Image: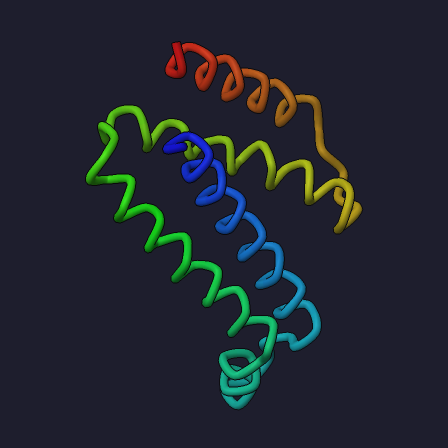
Length: 113
């Protein structure tokens, strides 16, 4: 159950970041007055809510699992972020980033053993 919650935490963080990216893309920050529009954008608020939920899960898990296990496992967020960048935002991912992701995945595998 704790590992499912840890994965949920990671997913909430990645989805929150994705929603924030959509929000700042829809409301560019060019002038000081734009900051108000960004902060009160439904996209930014929704991402913030997901972060609050993720933090609640994180605090619960801190009382149950070793930090030395949990923190490195969150690096899965980097992998998911790269995949989302490619599929949703149509970003080009160079080979060096894929190699980095492979290294992260291998590290998560070692930590999970």
